[in-house]
Length: 402
Image (cartoon, rainbow, N blue to C red; front, side):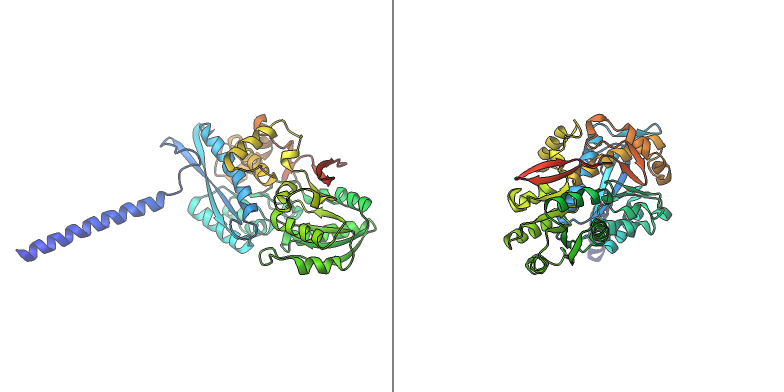
């Protein structure tokens, strides 16, 4: 009898353990499936949107800001009740993975996002990641939200790649003209060592030399491994350049500029479009150290759209800082993708959604149109380039001739 009671007690204990394990397993499977900003219900579908980018390491802030723009748009769309496609309501769920700015990690993350979350769109904010995803995205039927200005991502014949920022080759002429006129024709190169940085440098070198300039020093910096740039900057300044070409994520780029000034450099800076003046200012302390620089216009200083002030306020209230173009371009990009889904009548067919990207550009509401995109052409959004220089400690717009 005692033996029977012991067996019954053991069975009872095992039942409780297995029940708890089952509950725990269910929680793990459902975690993260709620849409951003709202819970949804049985009548509301969920569209998982993927993101792979640097969320740790030297480019972590850059990655977080691109992700913030996507999440903010998703929160707003979900907060307004979602969106309707084919008579059914949907809400967005952003699934993000850290790739440490490494192309191989981006590729592995994308495979996981597609297999586990069935993401019809995956955003990635670096050209190396885009190229890694382009190997299989057409076969796996997902769109790449390519936050990179690298022209090559639009020239490889991958129709399911949507480039969000303007191509960087549009900056070559205004950047070169300004610096040559202000400072001279000798330039030293110290950009990020990423593939994007190498391609940017190659294009600028060709254009600079075509305009009669001379490259007196040509190197790069691995921001993932280096935190003190004294040796690199010293070697570049030994060649007595008039201009330094620098760039990559904003924070390390600002440190390069600051060290150059500390070492006595009086010339100008060409700042590649990944780095943003307003974010660099947070490191340098003021714009004075950046006098003579030319780069992209900070979003907060742009007067190109009446929607910008409201967006800046909302972003600042949500994240405690002013938004840069990383946040702004990915924010508007998310809205454009949703409008393309609506026009395509599909939330999961990448080919159909891509075929309606122009509808996406045309149909977004004016209150979210913080960039004046008018067309989807050449694999990306087409709009006016905004260029700025730092003069006397202030941001000054520079007119770009078309």
